[in-house]
Each structure stands twice: as C-alpha cells, then as structure tokens.
Image 1 (cartoon, rainbow, N blue to C red):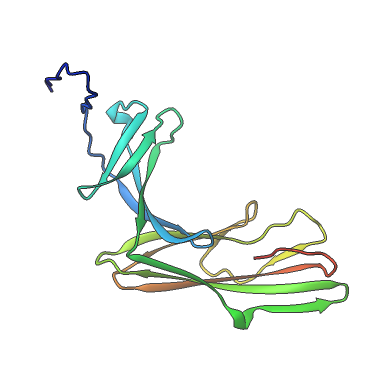
Image 2: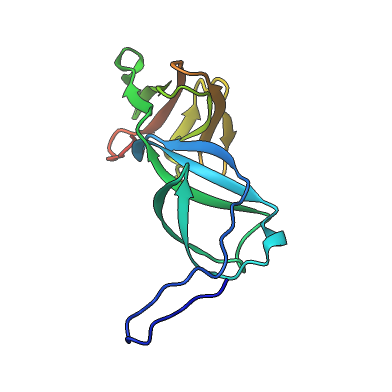
Length: 193
C-alpha cells in the first residue's frame, strides 16, 4: 500500500501487512496460582503466511487486547496467544474441611487434604476450558505422598500436575475434586498445601 510519510522528524508507524488468522479458542485456569480464566487462541497453519519475528498487536472481536512478541524460530506447529482474563468465567478453589484429617501413626504424622474446584460459565456461549492443579511432590524418601481420588483428571507423575478438560454450556457450573495425603516424620516441619 502506498504511504505518504511527512519529513517532520516524528516517528511514524506504518502497517506493512495485516493478517486475520483463523484460531481455535480455549480457556486455561490454574486456580492454585490465580483464580482467573485466561483465553488462549491457538493458531495452526501460520507457516503459510511467511511471518517474521517481531512485536504484534492482538485484537479479539474488534477490541485491542494487548501486545505480544512473535518468535517464529522457537514455535511449534501451533502458535498460542494469550488474550487475557475473562471475568465471565468464575473459578473458585476451596478446601473441603470435612475431608481434611491429621493423625499420628507411630513416629509419623499423616495429613490428608481434599479440594474442590468450581468453574461457572456466565457467558452466553459454550466454552472449552483446561483446569490444572498440582499434587505435592517429595524428593525426601521419608516423606510419602499418596494420591487420592482424582475423578476425570489426567495425572502426570513426573511433575504432579492434574489436568481436567471439559466444555461448559452457558450458565453451567462444573465441580471437580481431588485429594491427597502426606505421611512424614512428626519431628519434621513440612509445608504441604
């Protein structure tokens, strides 16, 4: 596109190319760290556009959502862009006190925890969301971690990550639960939660 740039010494920003990339959208949440849901755009087939690394402006539904850096050298077959928090997805992580116990077994202490994560969709459209949490891990052989009930979750033993993926219809709420117990010598101070 032809441009006229004034020679007044001021910086001028010019669009070289403007692409609208097809994307699939998915929400992500890690309520142990942040009770918000983040909208992610996953773009495949980006190789066809001959993109260069550099800063990009991100727009979603015609609204500017922020700036990001596109590094085409370190990417996979799918580009992931965060489009920020969505306040219409409400997430709450609560400890289920009635299932939490603490007991002494000989020279050891065993503490059990149960958690409930509630996800509510206040949007008028269905959404797909990935919710992650983590069970504690131990490198000390005197501290034993026992995974309890983790319905519908996939569990990665190497990093302790629990992952749920589901679709919520408009105004729908889904609750997921998980539990674990930690057995350790009673003379040790252990931070478990």
